[in-house]
Image (cartoon, rainbow over all chains, first blue to last red; front, side):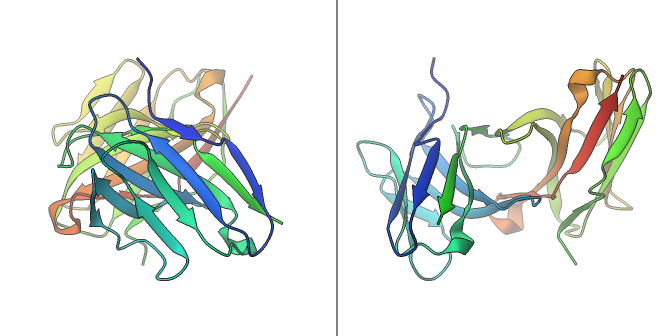
Length: 115
Length: 111
């Protein structure tokens, strides 16, 4: 009964490289959410996806960031040409439905460090 | 003004004491409220939902004041294992049911 699986746990990239973060939701969950957490700050919503659909990407930076949740396989958060300011913890959460009242189940996060 | 505001702390509290945190929210249309707990460098975990009539789960009591737009969390007989950051979370229909997070209140329980 695996929970939300994120990998890698830690990722180090040099400035200008690409970062790919993966998230496999809990079994039976079809809604995925990505959050970013900077040190000493709360979680900031980035994007909400269902299979093959981006429902809400209002929290995604306009450039360099993209997300997908294909029919098969995990959800991917992709950051192109990383900069030092992208260093953060990126958490993925999933839920069985995307409506009010449901708390989410989080993955353990990916800690991205840009050097 | 932030949508969800919390005192960042830290709250340094002796073991066995009672501690309370408040959280204020700005969107009067908010409908669902939660407290999450986050241990250092780990993922947030749901502690409890907050209901209009107030609710209790063991040593934890959550209350909602819609008129003043704040939520509270009370921890009785605090344990060393309660040391964590407590995150206030708000959800509303007009933000597409997204969870809006406070920055958290850090609690340190001392022996």
